[in-house]
Amino acid sequence: MQQRFEDKVVIVTGAGSGIGAATAKRFSDEGASVVLCGRTVDKLEKIATGLPADRTLVHAADVRQLHDVAALVAAALERFAQLDVMVNNAGVAPTGAVTELPVEAWHDALATDVSGVFYGCRMAIPHLKETRGSIVNVSSVSGLGGDWGMSFYNAAKGAVTNFTRAVALDCALDGIRVNAVCPSLTATDLTEDMLADDQLMNAFRSRIPLAGSRSTPYAEPEDVAAAIAFLASEDARFITGVNLPVDGGLSASNGQPKQA
Image 1 (cartoon, rainbow, N blue to C red):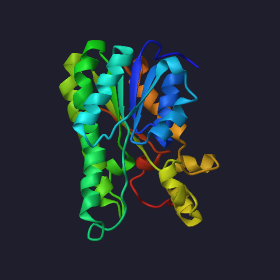
Image 2 (image 1 turned 120 degrees about the horizontal axis):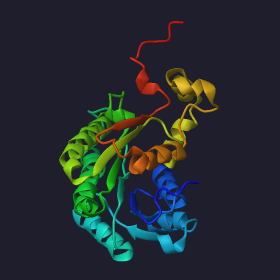
Image 3 (image 1 turned 45 degrees about the vertical axis):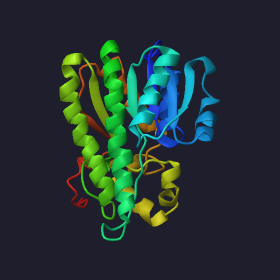
Image 4 (image 1 turned 45 degrees about the horizontal axis):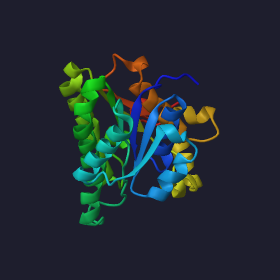
């Protein structure tokens, strides 16, 4: 595998499973020193066992707390002396009607999905100025349009999508690129029940163009990790403010049914 991130330092939040774990592995495989962040140390350490010890740091933090994110960035700098890439991946996805979900779920979605991204950017940017580094936020196709029964998640990811654009403008003169990926359904611990629902999978298959050319209608975490690595790399050196769908062509449709 090419070594696009040799001598680079990358922080990945929500690195204990799913997209975050795959992203940490992808950066490590390409030569980076990687800081794995999450709330559960055991999960992070399990991921870390498969990575080079001299280029891996496990740091527990709750991205809903500014002081935790500040300590995360400080720990990365203490261990590796620089920061080149910040991947704001940690998130939650409450589902249910707007009148039925508890108010606490609203606050948690905004605190994790929106404030967590804001804190990550705010704490990383001063150090990314020194390395002319980049930020990749993990939004969602749910941040590009609405879903049934996911209004809290739509609101949070919609905020991440537009926040990414705005911060990209603010950081451009400092040479910091800020982009986001927008995955559709991805095989993670959070989506196991969805993946086991044959009727739902058939519905996704009918909506995702690339599903017809593969055995599953959903993305693997590695698919999203590859897009994140691309956006963070010099291969994307003239790309900023982009929200890149990783959705098998889902967002290419205007929503009308197939007619032929």
